[in-house]
Image 1 (cartoon, rainbow, N blue to C red):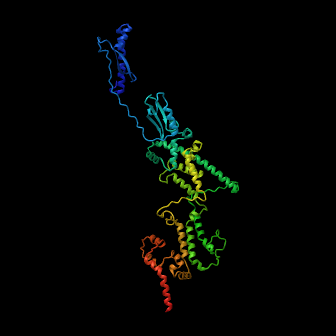
Image 2 (image 1 turned 90 degrees about the vertical axis):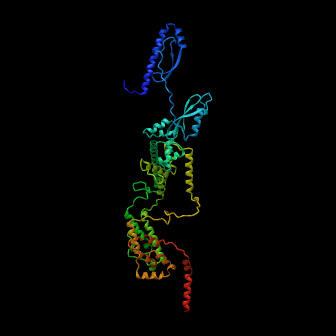
Image 3 (image 1 turned 120 degrees about the vertical axis):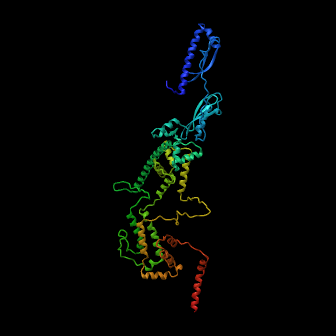
Length: 556
């Protein structure tokens, strides 16, 4: 026998010894009493006691132990009793917090349980003694304090065991995610989290604020995988329907190839890289548009103009030095700056609408959803929303369950579709919001900082700008006479934006070689209007003093 034995084995061995000892004592006592059964019966009932002993299986039972007469020797027949202390009951798990329930199902089941016995065992006699959870789905164990009956009650319809097995298994059969003809609560929660642009951590924080239980991360990933597959299936169906509609429209308009294949327009992403030579050619063509329009064909390309490059029309020479021509050149240069986005004769409003839906579902690109097909699922949901013009959860429900949703989901989707229909009307006016002060946004509008152009485009812009400044001696003389009044001349106001005047020449010539010229350029181009009192006085009385001077000079 080993030196050390566990307490359970020691107690079981002692119980076996006591059992066989009591059995031998009973046999020995019956032989001493004789063959009279009445005597044996009276002796047994007259001197009996109740002792707590142990059976071989360790279960405590009540045994009637016959004792001999008090005149006999009792030392060898007294049983060896074991004194045990009552073990305290293990503390039960505290069931607290809030739960999501199907009110109609929960109330009907509660009514059935309340009428379980004819002893008036109502709801007041029920007590929650246990709970089994799988995510947000719970199964409560209720016990009646009067009849000691136990009952099971779910917070939502369905079998909790079946849901647990479907999550633990590798199958993605949609029937396992449908409970009583409705979408499983855990699947619905994950679909809603993806639709509003949050993930597992944000959902956990949200449910903790509401004091609701949270599903485990493996369960969330399993539900997310199923939701992703369902959205991809819905996306395939919507894309197929859209392709059939585009094909029908192309055939009606007669847009087919020589082989009879319909031609369908596809709007690509505006951020795709385009070929550089296309950008350069478009930039050069835009720079010659205004010259071509006013009869100067010296810079026209062969594919752009059929006239001879040396052919010019009779346009007054002073027109090309006027403020109007300078304004036209400024507008054309601004259009040429956007040649990169004007290579294709399309606009990307539809693409940007799709991008806005993707940004909403990914939470504004604040979280990296590129792992575990998270971003792919959100892009699929965005495409489904864009094609069907409905909420993604509605399409997901219809794809999995096979019927349209009811209740709050249906009401919310109808409200969304109604509001979308109102916005498409021609007489729709967006509600205006009043604010105390209108502040300009530095990222939008005319005051926003534009992105830098490419180095090749910048070199072309430099060459174009310097070529426009080249003037002949006669043109310089004419410009000098036309702008002699400075602020009174519209030509001077337009030309000074491209020239360095005498008042600003000193600032530039005194700059150090290592000084950045960005601030001076901004000051010259976007100079703040200083409305001081002396300047106002000068602008108001300068013309009067000049006229008075001319009058006095004539008198002299």
